Image 1 (cartoon, helix red, strand yellow):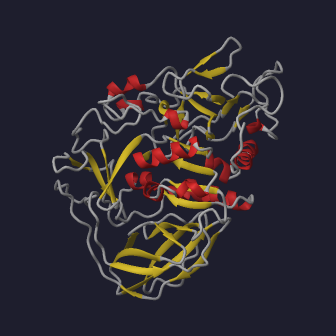
Image 2 (cartoon, one colour):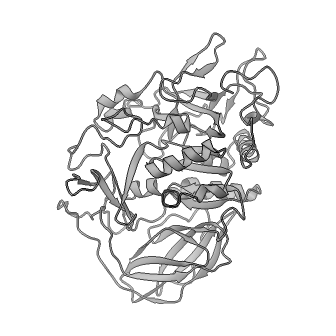
Image 3 (tube, helix red, strand yellow):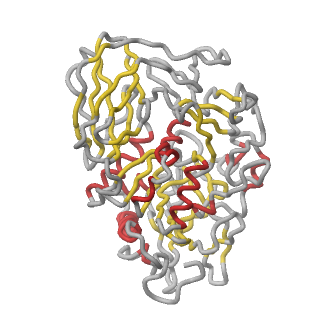
Length: 497
């Protein structure tokens, strides 16, 4: 068995990449691949001496499970990343001696326990592209159970978490180290298909991780468009502040994601771990409620800064589908509003203003889900859904697509908080829940897809109109311009356009 992880999962081309490996083999090497329109082999290390190290035992004595809160401190190795490597997300496969030749990877064989990903950033930020793709690495770590087929360790923020009281002067909450193995899961589902689509369609992008955004106050200065992709749940205060400032200064953001900016994290241990005061149980008991690192909840029970004020939407007005991940979900798509908006250019979709029925964006595909976000809304006299702002959504937010959520499983909607045995949080919902697609301008323009699986539908080519909307977004927002939320034809823009 061989496993590994990176000291930091982001490196500038030409710099040294540190990685940590435990193996029962006398020797191993690492093969490297870049995600693009295809999965491309780019290099390998020499054979390295293998050392086996067990994971640290769980501090609460949970039998058979590892400690998710500490650096696993496995033997360290180093690799100098070639200076010519292009910006991108790369996969490292840890190969034991005697396992045969270099593994052959493609989009269907990315997942596995003996591999990890890392980001290569350019020496000169913004030189290749003014679009920055943010890999939601904090969220990945939160869900990483550090499992292996030979060892179900179930060690994460959700499985046997470790809670810190804060009495030592550090932040209170569940602590999680980012120096643990775990393999590739979310990368294969959301990122790889979308990255392949971007390159096939001629959109060069540069990449960063959440930690890059957290640590570098000047990171966004070189870009015009920031992409949040897939499941982007955990944000630090520094991340939030930098993106807010970026938008205020004219930068654009496309949230092709959902459950976005739900929990706040506090970086610790020289930024190799984080703490978040969540409502995840420890040994069947919630160590502290209410959980105070919810962005939207009022002080002192939360942070009092609704994520809606940045994203336009919130998970509290959306929902998720229970059952086997990624779960059952409707195939109805988004009911189209304001079909003459530039976002819909070239799709041929109608909004019913011609007297016929409104079309649905992504109808017949699992576009809605597996988690989705919404804005508080009400219908006007013409039956058009408009954001009320009751939940913190900006007044200028224009709803372009809506899917009112109805149960598809017996316990759907009840999951909102009773799923975590926190019914008091049910009060967070403001009106009917609906997956909501829309945008607003406040300096720059912010678009939200309102669903985690937008990049999956696009990347797999499941709906031509969703692909066209994505092209329209990238073409318009990859340059800082004014008036990006105006309608392109037809009647005067509705309020908030």
